[in-house]
Amino acid sequence: MNISILGSTGSIGTQTLDCVRDHPDCFKVSAITGNKNVKLLEEQAREFMPELVCVADETAAGELKIKLKDTGIRVLGGKDSIVEAAMHPLAETTVVSVVGMAGIEPTIAAIKSNKRVALANKETLVAAGNIIKDCENEYGKCIIPVDSEHSAIFQSMQGMAGKREIKKILLTASGGTFYGKKRSDLIDIKPSDALHNPNWDMGAKVTIDSSTLVNKGLEMIEAKWLFDVPMDKIEVLVHRQSVLHSAVQFTDNAVIAQLGSPDMRVPIQYALTYPNRMSIPGNELDLFEYASLTFEKPDIETFYALNLARKAGEEAGTLATVFNAADEAAVELFMKEKISYLEITEAIEYAMSEHKNVDNPTLADIYSADKEARECVYSKFSK
Image (cartoon, rainbow, N blue to C red; front, side):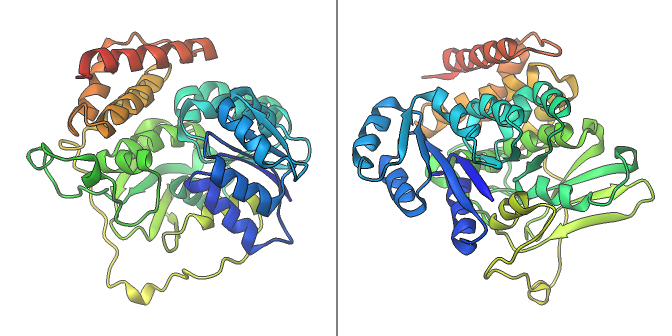
């Protein structure tokens, strides 16, 4: 199988390349993309020899082109080049693991180019779910989720006859770095305190979002679009062991779940090989190691971003875009220590309260709402 990896230098991208290393006879990398990490892109390009390497930062692209001039690999620069990589003619599957709104147009391009999309970008469906689903339905393509939770739901639904059989989606959360803490405990939190997840190896932005439960809010909205279910059928459970990755309860009250050790290679590789499975070395789940598996209700008073996400998902339209964009702006400010940790969720709430929702938005509406939300946060909270 030929694959194109958008965001090959990030956490999901590098683990996708681990899957390729594990099965070199099964996977061929046709294209890779990055933002500006020239050193790592050069290393990846020389190891996997893709036909195309795209770099969003044009200055970095020029530097990489010089470094790879002896290889014959084509190097392109600029944000539009990421779309070209998504449509690479040799690729059968496009892995979308770029961060943020940058995933929307490449995802649309990949669907329209008859690719399977292995989607690891939450923001694409959160901000533009209506557009992506319309495109998916029009072109008859199936988006395979890469997030561990959504992959677990997808796997649990195999063999199901129709969406009406779903009673409830059970979306699990590790609880993040500050599980059990109250708001009074979080007043003096610094970025270094928040950049730790108890179970998963993730990038900085996702790790911060996991600690505020914003990440789980984004996943709730994403699940709505992926599985065509209303928000009131999506329930979040805090599961500290991260062994049961999510589950589906059906109308007969049977619950089917997917379990495994915390290892992102599993959902990544399943998205590449679906409906088949291939071996993954190491990290085998041994249930005898676990005395019990626990499940709790999330603390939505301390981590009330979940309530904001549910509201955004229920109203649909551009409010979900604002939820996402305000969080991105707030996390950026927090990482620069310009706002406090608790102000991340306060900034999201404020931006949502200031926004007039647009139903069934166009891409122009979505980008406008995204810009408006960021400016709202910067002007109100930046010190």
